[in-house]
Image 1 (tube, helix red, strand yellow):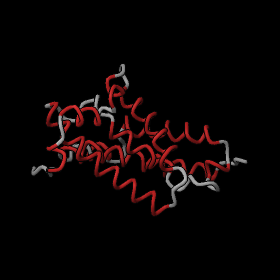
Image 2 (cartoon, helix red, strand yellow):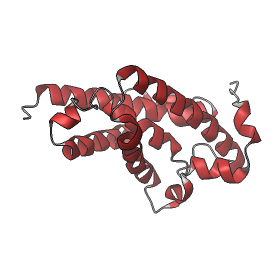
Image 3 (cartoon, one colour):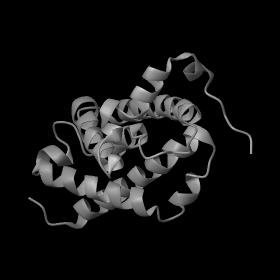
Image 4 (cartoon, helix red, strand yellow):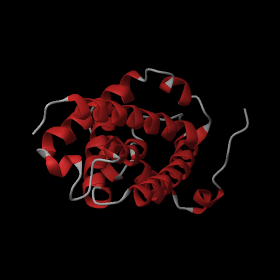
Amino acid sequence: MMRFRFFWSRFLPDEIVIGLATLGPLGRFGRAPGTIGSIAGLGFYAVFFHKLGPISFIFFTALAAYFAMGICDEAERRLGARDPGMIVLDEFVAMPIVFFGMGGTNGIIASYAGWPILMAGFGLFRFFDILKPFGIARLQNLSGGIGCVIDDLAAALAACVCLHVFLHYAPLG
């Protein structure tokens, strides 16, 4: 299978590539680095995404995903491993997708108690990211950084759909 190459990332020094892919020390914490990367992704959502409109949200998500694919692709090369657990940039950039359509000052998260929704979204994302149902596991087989990131994007999308369905039918507020 031909591997797509992100040429821009090959010019970055090892320290930057590995540091970004592992989010500094976060990818080296304990037994669950993906969970730590996902928690950091909650912060990424809260700081950069929660007040964005749909078009801006999609644009910045696509930009972050492309960046993550390039960095993760190069990190896999330099580490000599396929999607090692220490690479957590993929979880980090996927996490905001869980809350697509829920942010803003009049959004679902602002309308209800925000933390329970954020925690439910986090739990759903980890569920789909770990178990990889509905063909998500096959996406991980795509080459390089694309496979490293796209399964997390799909897990986040599945979590987003489930969270929207739950919030639509749940008698909240």
